[in-house]
Length: 109
Image (cartoon, rainbow, N blue to C red; front, side, top):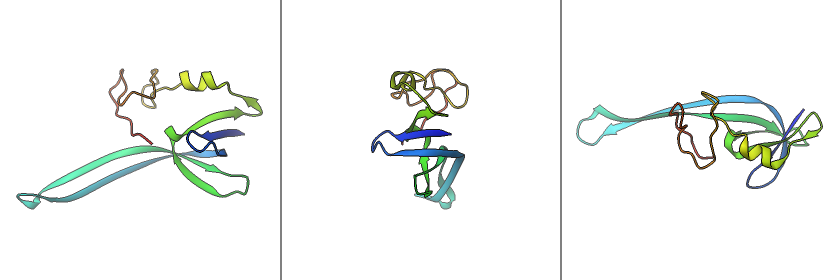
């Protein structure tokens, strides 16, 4: 069993699984309308968790930290230094907007 903690509210949850959210939106362009639409797209890594009452919630993966795995606590200094890029696995910091190795962009959550 994996326990996680929300980085802002410090609520604790049990990790159920992971998901990958993708989005794409389009709106008419200024000059040519639908002939030249403005498009936005991206993806977000999400985690499914539940509380002590079994209520399932979804959170952005950057907003949670692992605190315990099978009863063994994770030291807080290890969780801060153990951040890695989900695409290539290289070490990143919370301040990085993109991975210095592969260039993938991160969404702040």
